Length: 96
Image (cartoon, rainbow, N blue to C red; front, side, top):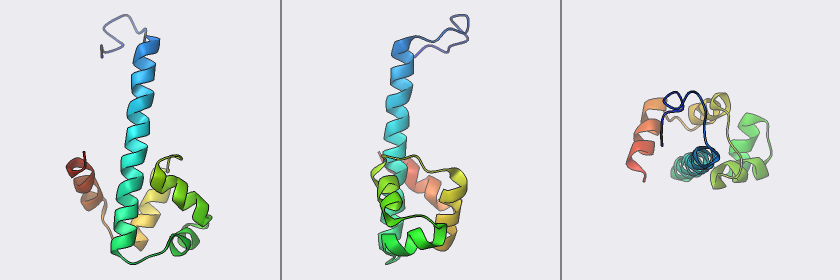
């Protein structure tokens, strides 16, 4: 994909679609890793949801990647799961 500054600041609709696909893949990857750590720690979706003040259905959406999780909320959940940010990022890099 061409850097949008290289073509005068314009971005093509094809580039926008590629970016959106990449975002969706990232959301799915982040959710999958969150699920991995939740299960590894023996925590239910209900327990994790209670920590964040949200519904278990919202946790399910995050884990499926159908909803994007805010970084601040992710950090709250990782703190509860006793997972540091670096460990999460390392897992992201290892997950293809």
